[in-house]
Image 1 (cartoon, rainbow, N blue to C red):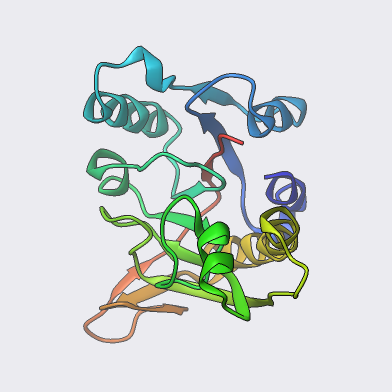
Image 2 (tube, rainbow, N blue to C red; image 1 turned 180 degrees about the vertical axis):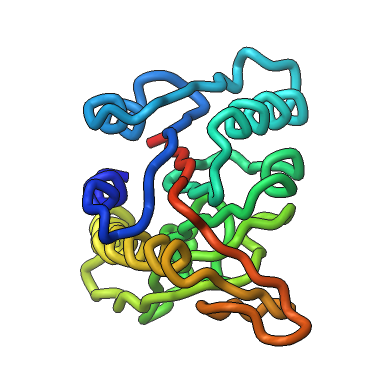
Amino acid sequence: MAALLEAAQDPAYGVRVAAVGSDREGTRGIELARAAGVPTFVVNFRDYSDRGEWNRAMAERIDEHEPDLVVSAGFMRILGPDVVGSHPAVNIHPALLPSFPGAHAVRDALAHGVRVTGTTIHFLDEGVDSGPIIDQVAVPVEDDDDESSLHERIKAVEREMLVDTVGRLAREGWTIDGRHVRFGRTAPGRTEHSVSDATDTKENR
């Protein structure tokens, strides 16, 4: 979150952070956004009777800021069709998808004994970590790694990849052909997407 907010201060980056939202008060993302003068909002999950009602409320708050792209960074709740069906949305995940989806990706990778894991940025769909992959970066697993040490190295890579990918989506646009994502404008028969200057970002860390 901090890296994206910092990058957005440079006009050449091509992205404006329209707002930062969370599912609870007191998160680092909300605090960083307020310090940077970026609008914030909280849709507290506990205030709603079920996940569907919460998702509808979250979608309404996002809509108020009219983002061209929703960025889910460290957000641990599943965003439903009310959100992902309204705006293009990307998520960053601490594993090389499709391996190790879900909330315990780093722990699962260690338990499985993999020698290489990494991070993935992908478009959100209605599944869990199942949308089209935009980019991936590999991170080696060291012999003495535990969940914390490995996750810290992954997060360092994630920050750089998030800033780079969101910037490219904004400046270059993208096309999606089945599960294949390509930067740049439309080829015949494919759908073009672009971001002008607004990104709505959510974090609950």
